[in-house]
Image (cartoon, rainbow, N blue to C red):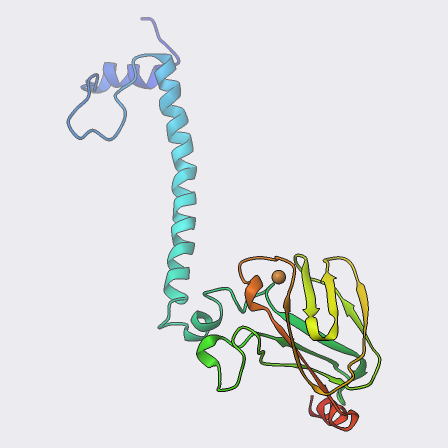
Length: 220
Ligand SMILES: [Cu+2]
C-alpha cells in the first residue's frame, strides 16, 4: 500500500471510516471541499491556523466595543457623555495658565485651565466664541513676562488690543513681555491653525488694579 504522509488523515478516513468525501460544491456550503492534493491541504491548514487567531482577535475587539458602547452611553455615564464625547474638553483646544511667581497657602502651584463658553451657556452681554470660563487676571501698569509653550501642536496666543501674538510650540519656550495701560477685558484667539477646534479656543485677559489683583490671587 502506498502511504502518502501528506494526505495521511485523508487516507485514514477513506480506508477505515468509509467516509464520503465532498468533491463538488453543495448548496449553502460554508467550509472547504475535501482536499485531494497537497497544495489544497496546505491552503486548508493555513486557513485553520489563521482562523484560530482571527476568532481570538474578534472576541477581544467585540468585547471592547461592547463594553465601550455599554458603559459610555448617555444613560450609564451622563458626565462622560457631556464632557468627553465630542472631544472639546478632553485635550488640545484650550489654554492653561500658571502664575509661577506664587504658590497657594498649601504650597500648590497656582494654575488653571480656561475654556470657551459654549453657545448654549452664554449669558446676556457675553461674547460668542470669545468669552471664557476662567479669565487671566493681570495687574494694570505692570510689566509682565509671558512664557508660552504647547503640549501638543503649534498654537498661537494672540490678543490684538495688547499687541500680543506669540507662537506656542511643543518642546520650546517662547517669551513675550506685556504692559497694559488701562483696565479692561481684552479678548484674543488662537492664531495658528491647530485642529478642528482651532476656532473655539479663545482667551480673555482681564487687567485690574493691583489691589484687585491681590484679592484675585487670594481667591485662588
Ligand atoms: Cu489654533
